[in-house]
Amino acid sequence: MPFGSRRAAFLAAAAEPADDFDRLLQLADKIGGADFKKRLADLAAQTKAHAAAKDAAEIARHKADASVAAAKAEVEKLHAAHQAHVARELKQIEADRKVAAQAAAEAEAHRQHAAELVAEQRKRLAAVEKAIAG
Image (cartoon, rainbow, N blue to C red):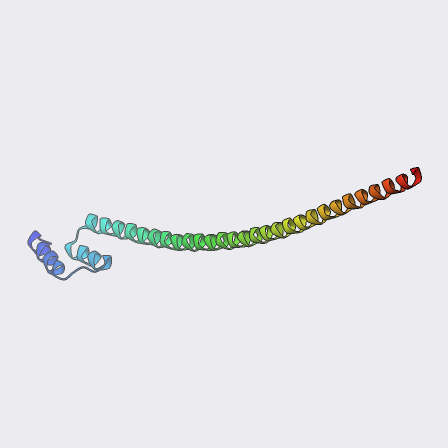
């Protein structure tokens, strides 16, 4: 094919936008450049591989995002459960403290009552000893 006609075929084919590599390969057939055709085929293969890798990376990213969201939800669930457990423990500690304070108050009341009984018994004993002595 003479150079001028190759150039004309290229310009005619290039006048319409080349949407894909098949169109470019057809253009390379018209031009007749085997090296150009091979480079376009290599570029097409690389582009397809890149698109596949990009799609795989996007899928992996979505899976990772979903995994992170699930892990975050699980952590929040565990945190809420832990907070509820701590709140129950604090409530139980407060209840135990109140019971202990009440028991301490009752013990003090019993101690005072016992001290009063001892004092009264000592008075009686002193009165009996005085009556015997005198």
